[in-house]
Image 1 (cartoon, helix red, strand yellow):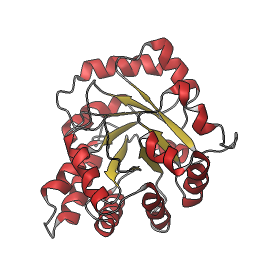
Image 2 (tube, helix red, strand yellow):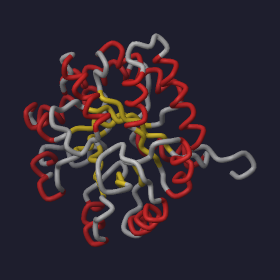
Image 3 (cartoon, one colour):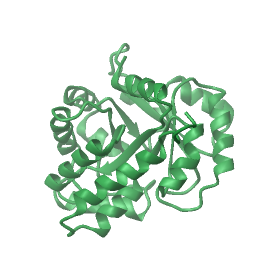
Image 4 (cartoon, one colour):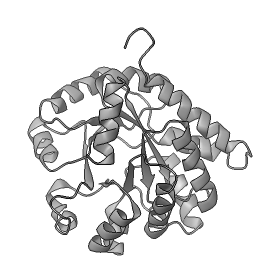
Length: 271
């Protein structure tokens, strides 16, 4: 099994929901970014979504947009993110998903990206703006038996028939967007999310992780019984932004990860 399969299997044995954490690589600076990510892994992060900063992150809310801008000002790039992945692989064995828009990958070269991402130790990629119908341009150069995952997005407006089509070419896990809008927006409709999870479970056996609009440990805890993973991004980036010059930033973020992870573990006596 690859790292993603192993991680989900191990968490299932413990009746735990995966904490999937997004951060923009290079935010606020390359060295601080690496220190923060190492602390997050130490605190209990189960899967890392390593964001590739992009100048036009249309699916992201203002918090992650500003995080990308800060990182880009310090020279962040896809190549830098791959170098960070190499470094992280000497420290942690948790799954690492590269989270990107298609433009940086296209500019880098799709074959070069695949080769270098695999060599760096990444476990897969999630591309926000790459539709199912156009993804063959990317995956056409992948080894057929490779475990490198293409994480697919499913929107709350996706019909069941299309859910099935998307799931058939996905691997690793499916990312269920909890609501229409951008990352970090408020107003989580739990019943609506549960209904979409039920529909998606009907067409796939892949793990399902939910993200967008999960802004607190309480939100994560409410969703945990129904999904395999919860994705937190804007909440972590908001902490970084609000404490950019705070010498205690690393400890703050580490404690935040612990709080989210605690919310995704079973309540004692209810395992």
